[in-house]
Length: 340
Image (cartoon, rainbow, N blue to C red; front, side, top):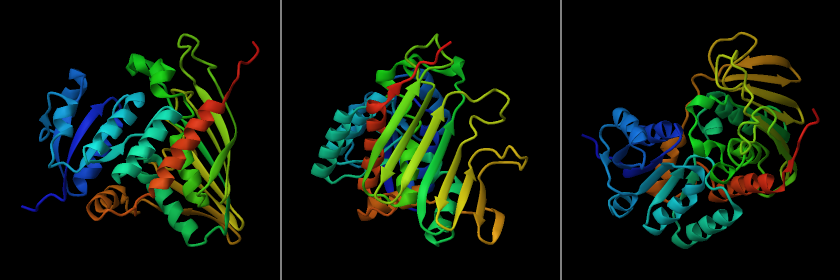
């Protein structure tokens, strides 16, 4: 039997992303040792999927296991930073669901502790790391297929599925606001595709246009960004209609000096089945680029980084800058109220 490359524990199961996060580490050679959650129903569901995890009596019991190298979390958004700080202080690396924190003060403290402990703090930006077409788009851009990248446009519509949402979903202090939460993916992709290492929020706005019964929910937001490698725009919302056969028609357009790429991540409303669709337009014409066989290597590279103390999957500075943009966008956002 092959020896596991690392041992890890899971703390916080408040978003379904925890299942894919856990699976990524397992596939990369990790051994799942512990799980802790305050909610019995969430814990029971997790145990059905991952029965090998021993149930801890507290988060402390997991954190104090010196045989663990990694803590994986999808806790309630405003609790993730505090957990990450404790994990790093206990000598462990961290993989968090997005967003990794909900305030600029939390970001500053996570940065400080990461620099102090030299642990890895990673956010699993699933729109890039778990989508084959987006991964393929990165390969094409790196190969010069569209020249120099000038701008990214990221669209992140989501369906609310209101009956399934817990109470904290509607409390801004807990989820951080729409430009912090689901837009986190768009800042990551903007930095990645433009190659920006410095960036700022130019303008942002949010609103609640369709859910007056939940005044704490922001169901629309957009943001304009500018970096030292290019520009970016993102629009996100909780307005996906029930007629769409998936949770959101998420898209990415990468504009270059010699062409552009469009990624339709979840659905091609023109009729092609499945997900991960990529279109390339250049001086030669228009083509559909197959991406279904493109390997998704986040889990493998992340575990490699834990073992080798490297930054191959995502530079630490990139991770923090993406969240800095998210938090600045939310902090600066104008709240829009439309006239009736």
